[in-house]
Each structure stands twice: as C-alpha cells, then as structure tokens.
Image 1 (cartoon, rainbow, N blue to C red):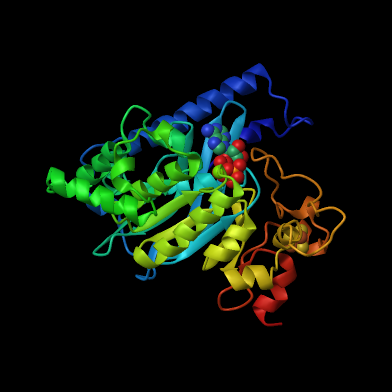
Image 2 (spheres, rainbow, N blue to C red; image 1 turned 120 degrees about the vertical axis):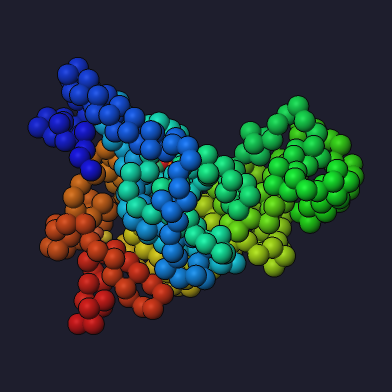
Length: 388
Ligand SMILES: Nc1ncnc2c1ncn2[C@@H]1O[C@H](COP(=O)(O)OP(=O)(O)OP(=O)(O)O)[C@@H](O)[C@H]1O
Ligand code: SF4
Ligand SMILES: [Mg+2]
C-alpha cells in the first residue's frame, strides 16, 4: 500500500508538514478510509467471502501478517505492522512490550474495535476458529462481527468502571449479556446463571452483589464482575488487556489467582496483555514480544524467560525488578522507539541496540527459528537458524 508520508520525505525535518502536504494527506486518508469503510459496512455479504481454514485446527486464533494503520492528519501510523502468531486452544498467550508498541491495537483488531474510520486493518488475516468452521475477521463485515463479539470472544479492560454501566444493577448487567447470547433461557434460568458466574469469580455473597450498583463495589470486586461477564457465555477466547494494572498489589494477586483457577474451569484460550513481566511469567504458556508494531521474538514462557534472544527482550528482562537482588538502579533501555509514522527500513531496534553489527544496516531482519518453539527477528541468529 502506498504511504501518504512519503510526500514528506524530501523535508529535512520529518515533523514539518506544509499546508499543501497536509491537504494531500487528508485527501489520501479520505480516499483510503472511505473505500475500506464501504467494504466493511456492506450488508448481506456471502459467508464464502470471509470463510477460511485454520493452518492448525488446534489453534483458536491465527494472526497472519496483520497490518492495522491509523490514517491521521500528520501521516499514516503503522500501529501494527505485520504481526503473525497463534493462540492455541485452552492456552494463555502473553503479549509484552513497552507502551505504544501495538499490544492493544493487535487485540482490538481481533474484536473489530479499532477506532474507525481512522483506524483500519489494511492487510493480513486474523483466522478465528469456531469449531465447525473458521472466519477471517480481517475480512468480516461489521454486522457479522457483532455475532462473534461477546459470544465467542470477549474482552476484559484495565478500568472496570468504564465498562460497567453506572445506572444498572450488577445482576441486570450480567443478565443482559446472558440473555443476549441465550435468548431461549427463561428469566429464572438467566438469574441462576448470573449467580453461578458471580460465585465462580469468587464473590462471597452473589445474592447481595446481584442487587448492587457498580459504584457500591470496590475496584477488585468490579474487576471480578467484569471477568464474570466476559466468561458468562463460555467464549472461545478471552482477551485481558492490562486486567490488573488499575488495582493495588494485594488485589492484583487475588485477581491473578482467580485467573489461574478459572483456567482450569473454563475451556477458553486467553490472550493476556500486560507491561508486567511477572504476571506473564506466572500465567502464560507462550509469550509474544512486540516492539514498534512488530513481533521481535516469540516462544514458550521458558524460551523467553530463561533464554531471551533478542537484545530488546534481554533489555526488558534486565529492567524487571527481582526480589533479593540488590541493584543500585534498575536498568532502562537507552534511546527511544522510532516514530510510528517514519519507520526506518532497517531493524527498528538498531538505533538502541548495543549488539548491532554490519548486517544490521540491511533491511528489516526476517524471523529466524532458533529452536522448535522459539523464533526471533535479529541478524545475530541468522547462522543458528540456517544451521551454519
Ligand atoms: N486512535 C488512534 N489514533 C492514532 N494513533 C493511535 C490511535 N490509537 C493508537 N494509536 C497508536 O498506535 C500505536 C499502538 O498503540 P497501542 O494502544 O496498541 O499500544 P499499547 O502497546 O497497547 O500501549 P500501552 O501499553 O500504553 O497500552 C501507538 O503508536 C499509538 O500512538
Ligand atoms: S538485528 Fe542487529 S540491530 Fe537489530 S536487534 Fe539484532 S543485533 Fe540489534
Ligand atoms: Mg494498551
């Protein structure tokens, strides 16, 4: 896809945009987003257009070269720039990386909740396994996606108060979710189901909480209610985006315990997004490390924590506080992330990397397989991967 920001490349100062360039960018954005919106908002689209086949039927989700861009007035932000990974059935995949690296946009793309019309999936596939068939969410029309969202995939956000409706009682809000997805259930059955969900997430007096309003609950209780809502319809995938960040440490620990227990009780796969490497280490089966909109390393939790390979992952590990290890100051990776509008055509980490060598001046490194489960995008591993 052409890039509106290229009109700007002749300027020495990349942040400078003249009035005519700005008009060109707006025109370009409108042309692209109008076309994509028209495609997305079509009604009566034949299923065959977004029907697909999983590469491995044991996966719930397969991201394949996903590109999600924001068409802004100052240029195209490549928020997700070619991301591929799998979420196996019943497993937890942790996504880590520093702020702004594209973790939330990767998951919001799967929910088709990226802020439109500026935010658009422009390339790639998100294959979602429904059991009897699989859909490519990147191609699905918006009206069909409503049937998938909440029913087969649900999301837990960082701040539960913003996701709960302050004017309805807790019970009513969970009932609504259950009724929407199980219209055949009677009122009494729906209430029983809601009470069971409240019980499952460790709420001691479900009958009492059923009648309360969100503002009457503590942050931890509200997050439990959100989790109850998210798993009420037994989704194939639960996305948890920083589910414990807004909570204090003891409540964080309780919510993590809850997640661990729930993993055994529900069949859902979990996509867990967090800055907190400790949470990932405890919860995740596999880990994806993102940097500037791309995946730089992925593998099992052991691969990533015991044998981090990419210099960025090594830096992340070194910046994690460890109990009983005395350090004068925590390590922080020097330098900053390149602008998402002016991404270089070489390794995005090169300007911060203390391991760079001649090859790193070439194009962005491919993904090298360094063990059966472990892949890394870094030239240092080219020889390992080729067996040299
Ligand atoms: N509505 C938007 N308009 C323009 N750019 C956006 C928008 N939303 C996100 N972005 C950009 O997309 C990139 C990825 O954002 P994202 O929210 O996925 O980051 P993140 O990894 O979830 O960060 P954090 O850890 O802070 O939540 C960032 O560069 C961000 O500035
Ligand atoms: S490819 Fe080169 S610059 Fe990039 S992370 Fe690896 S060693 Fe560093
Ligand atoms: Mg985020």
